[in-house]
Amino acid sequence: MPATITLIDDLAENECRQFDLPDTTFGGFVVRHRGQVYAYHNVCPHLGIALNWLPDQFMDADRCFIQCVNHHALFTVDDGHCITGPCAGDNLTPLTVERQDGMLLIHVG
Ligand code: FES
Image (cartoon, rainbow, N blue to C red):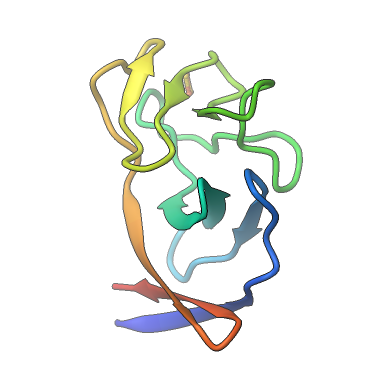
């Protein structure tokens, strides 16, 4: 069923925030990178498990890529493409995110 999740748009550059998603185990997350905001399901294409262990922690140490903490796959922030790791060539599943009046609207379904 289509739904919209609303978050306050107060993310700093390269900051991430998790949120629950209906009918999912691990939910999703948003990240601000180079002034744009992106949203993905929190599922690694390698094993189908969550990308993170700590809340809201999805970036690599240099804060250039999204990183799966399990086996260290790296994903480009702007399109979720895996550039290295056991799922190289696969992609995170994107969610549509819209910025409106200081809020982030994440469209689900
Ligand atoms: S579960 Fe993500 S790289 Fe293995």
